Image (cartoon, rainbow, N blue to C red; front, side, top):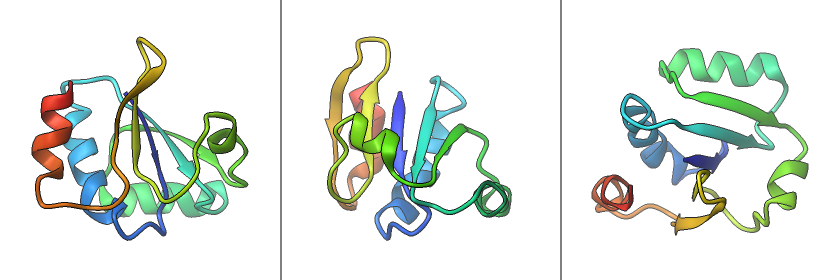
Length: 102
């Protein structure tokens, strides 16, 4: 799964812990969009105790190349390189929806 997110995104504060939890069972590669320099992003990851892989897209170029527009989070199935689930914003059922999508 490829997960587009940002440290500043309010919805991501709810969704990202679930993505981290899923990373123990699924391969997760994340793209942190406009989340600051590497030192800041690494400190955030460490402070939150997140263990999934992260690519720092500090200026948002990679996100735009993948068609990212709007607020994160977005999930893509990297094995088929297509959108499997797009969820803009947080809903109480996010954990169930994300888990069942894969």
